[in-house]
Length: 226
Image (cartoon, rainbow, N blue to C red; front, side, top):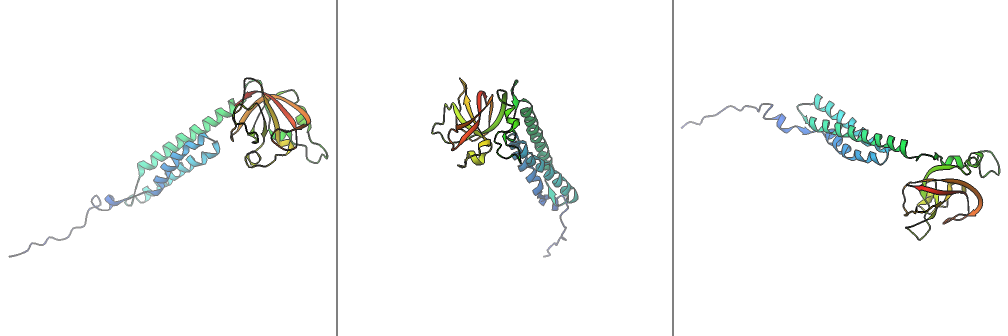
């Protein structure tokens, strides 16, 4: 009795190496970053996320081209690039629209920088730039200073410059606070986000600040709240 012996034949590329190509980690990262890219709608600064998604996808395509026999995921990389570009365009488009339309007609946007005393002028509290705003209809953004036990139907509150003082128990300096009185039918529900106020600007020194120690110089009679 004889045994038939067949010589060993190595698998062809189609049967061997190609069947076991690794999925490109850069391609996977591109898709994950693209999914997180929707956060760009919250703030354009997060546009770095989909931008990294595009770069990861491009890196994946390059790696796959150079190591075609080892890496797979070309379609995944293109999907990550495409979705990242969509998120990037949507986020920046929304930010542009918001910037162009956030100030309602008839208001002039101001910032807390205009309310600060001039450097080197001793004894100055209210600068000339702030005095020029007296009686004008202005628009300003800020955070609600916590203090009142009331959380709904608030008609008067302190608007401050940043979250460091409004949310962590700090006492904002006098030129970083403006006291807002809402006209009917407006009212505020307490929140920790940015509030946009349209109002008539007044300067009335030596008044006690609501919910905070010390005085307040700047007062706003608001007829717009967002």
